[in-house]
Image (tube, rainbow, N blue to C red):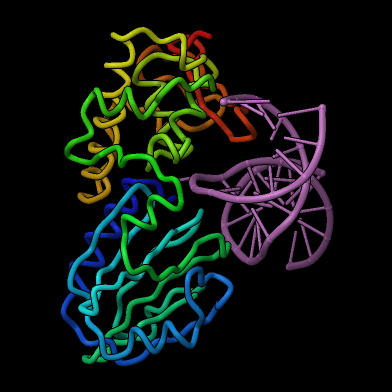
Length: 263
DNA sequence: ACATTGACCTGAGAGC
DNA sequence: TGCTCTCAGGTCAATG
């Protein structure tokens, strides 16, 4: 689930519920998910603090504390946040739970344990050390920045889009949507695109992610010409009715319309 | 430099 | 009902 649009919504959810409340207890149910800090230290650093701000870069969510440090979440394949005050609403695979002054709680649920919980002093340092490219929805991510980010990638288009060191935020689902919207086969070499096509790709990448953020926020379906709701072998293309195909690209399940996206 | 494969983990759903 | 198989929206390391 969690690609950039999901994480952007987690950010909003986090802000809406947890800011400016004193943390009174921290329960760590799965210490293996901790990255830059031990369980004991994390408790020490969090109890008594408040979250004052949030920041997102790609698929990473940073929650800023009044100590100036940041708690970092990466959601892996199955992570999500749940805020609740009635224990009956506690989800099934909680790996970290924060309790607040008013007895409410925030859980980080992560069934497959592929997520990460980190703790960093500076966001910029983390981004550099982990070689993350620019966030695709950053305000200043204009076409020249996009061109720079792609560099001289010789990979297949889908792989370039998903390469977090070039572009931060795009995963399997939205890579497919972006190639569909621009009528490219995902295995096409990125290098083969001319400038007009690259400009279209840039606009489509931002447009798709922006639209997805909004659709998820409003809990409504995707636009009628999106392939996302038709990720099924045998489903029909929302634009030309041809049969959707499932192929593999670098081991990832990939859905395409063979008519709209010729190789 | 890039593609492929398997590993990390666990569970849901399909098919028998 | 229960078993087995496949698949899952992320990332890393090893291999060719």
